[in-house]
Image (cartoon, rainbow over all chains, first blue to last red; front, side, top):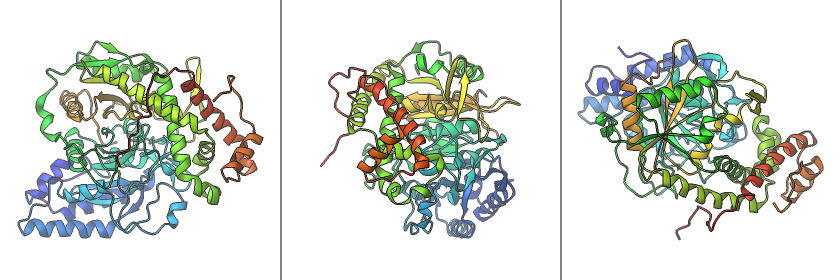
Length: 462
Length: 63
């Protein structure tokens, strides 16, 4: 029987083995969405007829002896900044609803479909991906399946909520400053931000070109690897997509952690975080016997540089819309984007120069270390509509902005990061970042698979 | 970034800077925009204060 907890690869195996029809799998997912999404508000579009039609086509191909791919019949959904043929690409905005429908799917969507997965719908997000909470004024807040009074995180909040709630086994999101890892941690799913340039961003509305990334969400490490393997690799349609061949990660999952040098990221990554978050990192480190601490210098400046670059690139991208339709922006993003257009050019160039320097410092860590550990988020999911600031110890921080304190300095330099979920009984989820050198996603998957097999991390349906 | 002391951006600054880039920033937005710009300039100052050795900006362009 297929239910909300069935893994993507279990579904594919049963569909490929003729045990169940893809149409029935998709109908089941549509039924779960019908029952639960009114409470979660993860979806902004459900492609019922298209999904059923795609599943029927897949069933016919199977019956004709064709191979429909490794993700045959697996329902998935994509953050609504991915182009989906026939839909206007909202990117969480009201303004983009006036755009003509996309004429083709984004590369990542097309690649998952080519692997046999069935697109079920488009998912809610912060407007133009400029936020960490998915408290979208136009389309309503997406809710956390572990506690619907709380944020799902953002900006890929719909992706995390839909996967955590068991509506779909796979989701697609994007991450510029933490927008895959933050919601994955708050909702208790696995989330991968691959190396910058590893997965094509073609057909994706940008936030900041310098560090926009595409990646998957899943509740099982093997599912995450299968999705990553399907979408990774060169794409001439994305000018920053790497031409180096992708290393398949599915084959890495059973290799264990023997021989990997794993360390804890100290300094900035141990401060201004709740005790339960630091305890979760400690549990993962203990399981991996990781006792050595490494540090990155000037992390607070790295975070500042990430903020400046994001603001300047986003401000430039949206300048025309801010001139002509400022009132149609979400109040949660409009004033920040307006401010972003006013930053001096020298600040942007200095931030990019700092980025090159900081990248070199990170590379020094990975000369003798394969994977480093750090918290994903500083605390569990805040309540929807929480006050703008939160006190942690003697320090007052921005409730939403601080959610990216531990993710921003890493995506800023394009490192691959896999957030693993820690879901204790009766507690809200938190996440731990597994971080590697560029293009070494394989090491991340080895560690994540081992932690899952040992029961240290898990992502139950909420 | 040459100003050596931190400064609070004013609503008048926002109106003037906005007009320089063709933006008409609504009066009800100016206080919030000033606050956000102050924060961004503080972030820029953090970078400015750090003596970056000879580093070129990260992006490269292949013709």
